Length: 188
Image 1 (cartoon, one colour):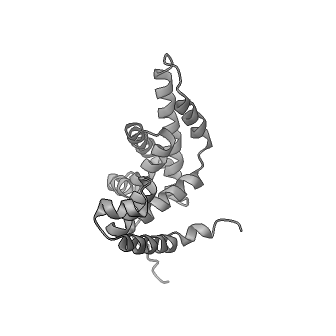
Image 2 (cartoon, rainbow, N blue to C red):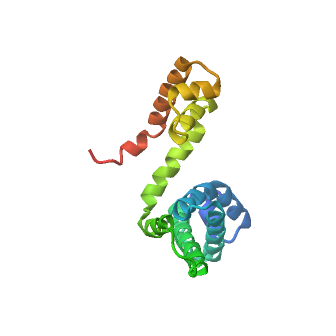
Image 3 (cartoon, helix red, strand yellow):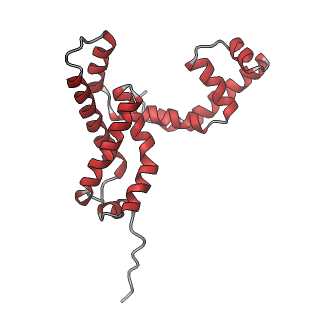
């Protein structure tokens, strides 16, 4: 009879079994995208950080019940979403005596409307941007986030307009390659 080889336990198995190093590894791997989810829902970094911490505590408390046939990532994201909603409700209760501003009302509505798919797509774009070379990332950030024209970007960075145009084209091409998998999900 041949001996069956069982490899090292997976991260999910180690987590389920209460291995604290698995929790640390999960934190390193998933805390940034969890933070993006919470920030999208809450709109404030301090509240998003609180939600991520709560999510990890809740996950750790439920670790022994985690089904290792499932993937960790969607499970953690669902816990993060619930934790963010709990944080939002706590903040809303604390501010009940204050009148709601229009932008706060929009946020109340948007918390319930954000989907995991939308949050995942946002994370994918942010990750792809982070992977770009700094010079390409800078021209995109200034143009799209700061609203600068290409001439203004050139002046701000102290480079030629032609360089801005070529970096922008190269950055857009690289992003398209890195995000090609998102296009496969969009019905034509």
